[in-house]
Structure formats: C-alpha cells, structure tokens
Length: 223
Figure (cartoon, rainbow, N blue to C red):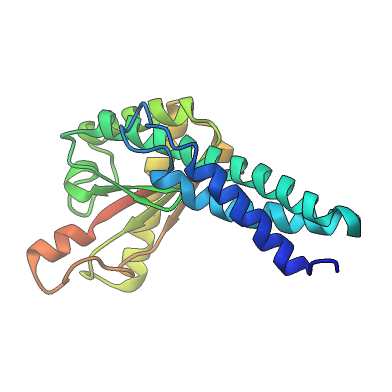
C-alpha cells in the first residue's frame, strides 16, 4: 500500500533530523554547537523540502522524493542559520563596550541603539559616537551582503503623537543614510519611524523614557 503524502513528509523530516543531529560540529566563531541556532532553520527547511519532494515526485517515488527533499531543505535552512550565527558573532565583537545591545530572535539579529549613543535630546543630527558605531555595523554588513537592514526609530511619550512620529522617522532616515554613505547598498536598507508606539519601559519615569528613545536595526536574511 502506498504511504500517504503526510506520512512521507514526516518520514523525510525524521530522516533529515537524524542527519542533522549526527553532524553537529562546533561553530568556529561562536564556540557553540553548529545546531545551536541553525537547527530551527534546518527543521523548517526539512519540512518544506519533504513536502516539495513528495509533490514533485511520481507516486512510486514519493518516499524517495520526501527523503531527498527533506535533506536538501535541511541543508539550506542550516546554511541560513549558520550565516546569521557568524554575522552575530562579528557584530558582538565590533560593538563590544559601545552601549549597543545585540540580541538574536530566530534568524534576525537586533541591534538596540539607545538615544545617548545616537542623538541628543530632541535632535536629529548623529553624534560622533553614533557614527563610529554605525561604521562598525556597516563594516560587518558589507561583508554579509545577503542581509537586509530594517531601521526603526522610537521616541518616548513626551510631545504630540504626530511630532514624535516625524522625529522617529527622521532619525531612522539619518541612520539609514549614514549606513549608505558607508557603502551599504541602498536596496538593503529600509527605514521607518514608530514614534512613541512599542515602548520597552515605563514612560512615567525619566529612566524609562530614556530607554524608549532608541533606534533599532534588525538584520535579517534577504533570501
């Protein structure tokens, strides 16, 4: 009896998972096991690859198609995760002790640049400190040219909504323009302002407002 498509996809996924866990190697940049962050991409790739393999194969070759598709998808998924792993490690090294935090969310790398690193209060001109930080970001971004940079400006709740929205947009644009001046391709840079939306701290305190005044750069795979 022929297996169902869903069971074949599962078979391919399990086979690829065994392959992945059997090939764990230390990441030479982060010191972590190869699949520490890349496994999520591999698992997603395995499922997608198995489904494609089943759909594109003839009935008698569906099992084989699921296995081949899962393995290929897993390899692609792992590659993206590893690519971002190495980029993350280099950004951490470049931005150490700058006041900019580097966090990871799946295949996204998030750089949180507080206002004291980027702009003066109610100002839109990048500080010299900000330019040094952004030059370091650009250095890594140019090396990893398959990454898009999403720049978002945020403010605290002081002032009107419309003013804060415009201020955050102008600041995000300034950051984006400086990165492009450092030879980061324009088609990789996306800038937007969110104003006082999405606070990360209490706007009722000076310390909270200071945290909310920030620019975030999210680096994500283009492919």
